Image (cartoon, rainbow, N blue to C red; front, side):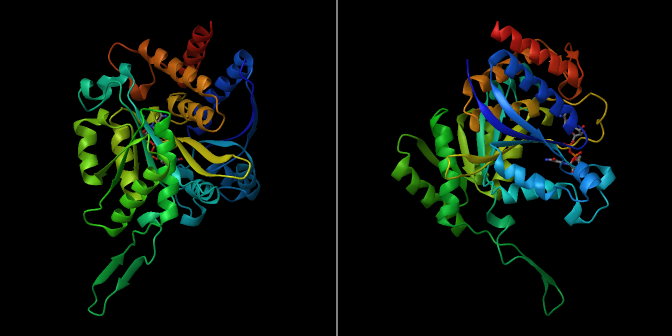
Length: 371
Ligand code: NAD
């Protein structure tokens, strides 16, 4: 029996966040009962829910808790109720504060195409069936944060907008190391993407990734690709990739492109990882890619799979419970193969189910797998 006593902070947030998080709670209860894995789970507020209670999208005490636990699992934040607040007080600021203070510099976005959903992709089945890519996006540097930045008015009255793409050796090396280590547990291949043909920061990126590879990760097959070519290759032949590592801006675009190869937002998990501290623990935040979906909130209609798969990533990357992570992923595959579909992934001939029935079905599949 696997034993663990790991700390998890759950932040359900707003809209469908609490509904999808409820299904994760049931998966945790299943793991505790059937697999003897124990978690120390605490729950708190983020986003609009925290604004309503504390007047701020993330209370200082919640931030402090997030820094103490092994992993944070977040549902979603935001909604029309808080749309008119100042930017500094909006629900999304809660999420940005978590990312900033936890120093989460590596964003992991898997793009996995489940066989049962291959026809939902905009690409042909043979191009996406069995797809399993991991995109590692640098999250705290690059052009979104570089200075100088701003808009100025020139003497002739026209205006000039400036952003600065800037990366340093340590910023590149730490995110590349995450990619190499992930690849070592997957197919052993990393594609590093930049625009070294036209950008000095891209030349530096390429050189530093290569250098780190030659020093420490010689067993991994490393290739370099211009980011625009990568965008084309993702729709031409996506299965050529294993792990893609890239900067903040290109990663923003390429990860959304790769995600959409696989179908619905309701299926997409993510992880954001920070540095390993002295005790060997890596700060980590897990969350579905989707938002709070106010249009369906409260209707028991949301797809809980993205959040359940985010929790599976937490099992894999924060709790070292690979077997349990795979068990959950297999249960999800099983349920999809049996034709269970929430509205967002509905297909002809399938059974349309609610959030809670999708949760029931995943628990039943877990039971079957454990039998
Ligand atoms: P969204 O992801 O909430 O919804 C986009 C569309 O996808 C909607 O039609 C929604 O019903 C559907 N959808 C999303 N998740 C689903 C799921 N699990 N199951 C079934 N259908 C699903 O994006 P949006 O509409 O642009 O934003 C709504 C709110 O969420 C806004 O306040 C936005 O700021 C916030 N938001 C939060 C996050 C986050 O918390 N990380 C991310 C994006 C948007």
